[in-house]
Image (tube, rainbow, N blue to C red; front, side, top):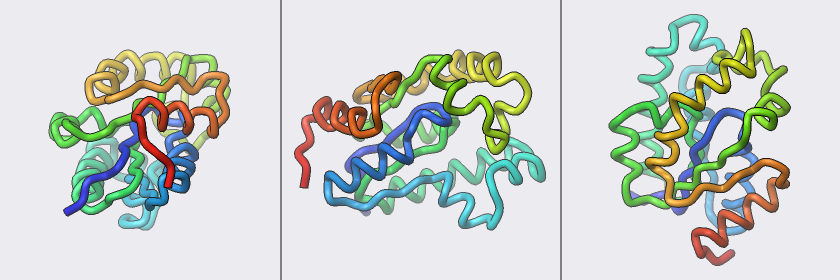
Length: 171
């Protein structure tokens, strides 16, 4: 069993995948994304799982993917935006280096507002994003070791701020 060097949490579209890959490269470790794990295991997109089976079915798959990845992966791990909704997942994150990548609503709409592959933002992106963040922000903050605002920053800048905040040295 290994423990991730860094776990990234935050809303959809905040840059977890991009920053995660940069962090992994700079730390000389592997990168893993639990959403990608679910897609690979199921052979269909997250949007398809939501439509075909519903959100509860997806959350069950997500919970298992996160549990497995936390137990197996020793590099940088990005969790899906809603993974922190599960009490068990939040408990598993205790004691780990967790970076919450945050962004404001205008940045979120700019990044995700027109993306139809985001099933939870399909109707009114601005309103739905605000509601999602009202439900999740305190959970992201609860599990976070550090919070890094991504608004107006390049992925490289966000990566450096996270490394500095965690006092991690590059490989």
